[in-house]
Image 1 (cartoon, helix red, strand yellow):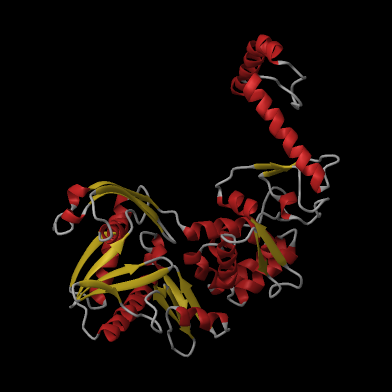
Image 2 (cartoon, one colour; image 1 turned 45 degrees about the vertical axis):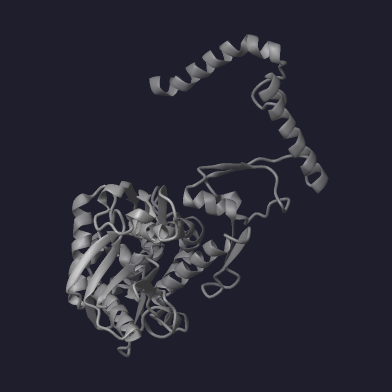
Length: 437
């Protein structure tokens, strides 16, 4: 058949066809049905995609790596150009080259020409911007036509996932479908059932459908900005009082789709000037090395690998010795949660290693409060402290007794109930005082 379904994802891409009335994923790279959404422009003119693109970059081949291509849809980047060798190429043409290569591989794998495509798309390419969202779909439609598709339709990605799930159930049900990807997260509530599979129009079965432009690459960016970029000058002061090193360099370097902006020739001259005016020029030397050697994607890949590692381990290491001797970062789950924004702030007073080393990232993190304690450096003492804290909280919840509070004297439950109205009134007045000043 000449029809296919194409899932062009932020991180990976797949393409499915129909064989013997059943959907089948096409082999796109060395027998594998998924291929990374990555492309590498080598200086000799070769343009590998997928794993080969990443391998060429990691092995140090001269050229330009581009990943998370889908992220530029719906943004101003889609109309911009980037330098590839001596020429400038639009991001639109980069996406077209990649999707064209995927189409040709699928045709070689299936042995038939593909002329019709059902293109997957997120619920929103861009949040709260209907015009930009429509433009993103239109650009993707035009690119599909350019690479050889005659008939082009779109399907919301979570709805496609719901239809696949529907093939596995035997009774009608209402399902919440979550599609959490590299660039977007989409959610749909759909009525499903075996009797509904043959209906051509399923619009009435979609009870709710929404999404946000937040995905795995946003987590990567937050980790990078919180832990890695300060080692390269992010947030460090300039010699002129009251000014920090411009943050835009670090935001671009921490964002997959914007890394290539850092390789523009003018940027090196800018950064050298910033280094002259920075209070900590050694940090800017590190940044200059990354940009000069075009290793921004190396940083991004190491952050991504650490993020993935934290799914199975409590800690992950990010080696940066290629930037400077002995430079490395150890990231734990608390730091990951804080830097992603999932946890707003934390207060800690018991540590696996005591005293906490001076260079430990907890000491410099603005969202962490560290409090000292006495006599709890042994495992036994830590367990006793934990038990006592639990007993204090249980006592208050069960009887109203207040013990060992920092900002209250010891009060039994009866006394606390007598003075409670005064405390509440005092707290209310203290709370509104800043608004009245």
